[in-house]
Image (tube, rainbow, N blue to C red):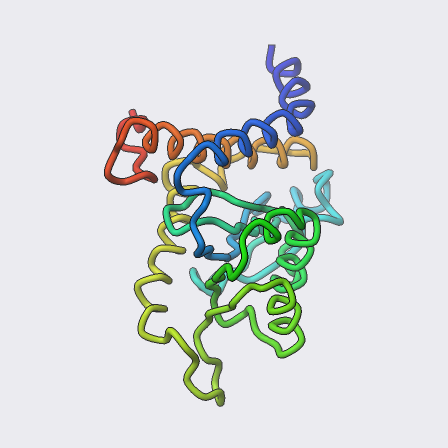
Length: 226
């Protein structure tokens, strides 16, 4: 029955995370020396009544998505992935959480990720700025590439940002368009976490399958999209 399924799903978050990592490390993309980082909205409600009654109140909050020029109430999925779209690290936060602090927390939570990858390159958007922030990344031997903000001189790698930005947006669109990220229907913190992790596991499993079967595009979900 539906209540039983929801209970089992909420209890499975740890298992979903372990299986996601096992599959990810068993792909050729896991050793990629270039990561991309971004965050995307995970809407959790639209009506004022939902906002007032939801168990997510206090975690979910109002935020703004510049990519789609819209306000929303919910969470943000912060994702570090390879250029092929393979999830490496992720976190769910309130809509107003600082993207830089969240990234540093993600890296601090799993120091082995960076320790095993000297001279890793990380590509982000203009929100990942700040001298202190870049210094902390440099101390971990991570080279940050991002577009220059207004008033800044041109930064290294500028010609690459436009096509790579399309890669980042494409990964987010895979989650939202094909994996229905914003139609998760979670109503509790545990429910939302498990349902978001289902989507991350689904993408990781598809990439793992495509990698092991020699498919030309690892992130293609065409074979599974029926």
